[in-house]
Amino acid sequence: MSTKELHILNFWRRALIELYKKRGVVTAGQLGKHVGQSRTTAKKYLDRLVGEGCVGFEEVPWKNGVMSRNYGPVKADKS
Image 1 (cartoon, rainbow, N blue to C red):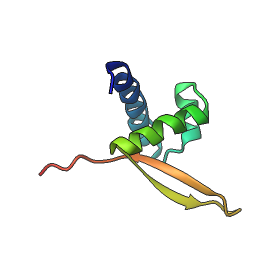
Image 2 (image 1 turned 180 degrees about the horizontal axis):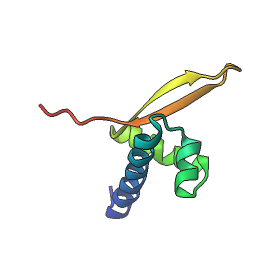
Image 3 (image 1 turned 90 degrees about the vertical axis):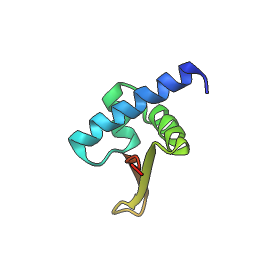
Image 4 (image 1 turned 60 degrees about the horizontal axis):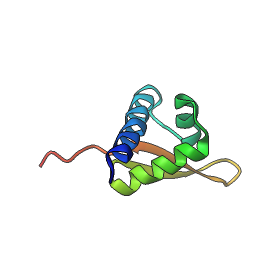
């Protein structure tokens, strides 16, 4: 991973943590709005952070049956 990619992912992770502390539950749309980007851009970076193991998600159904992903930071294991 390049230094540029590392800084971009760190930016999105910090934004997620900041919003998570305020709301408790974060969707890609909420995070995108928080940083002034689109939901699609936020989802792209959230999926990348999930792949890196920094962020976890839970799929939750809405009333109409559509599945929503709620993201949150993964706590580091201290062992």
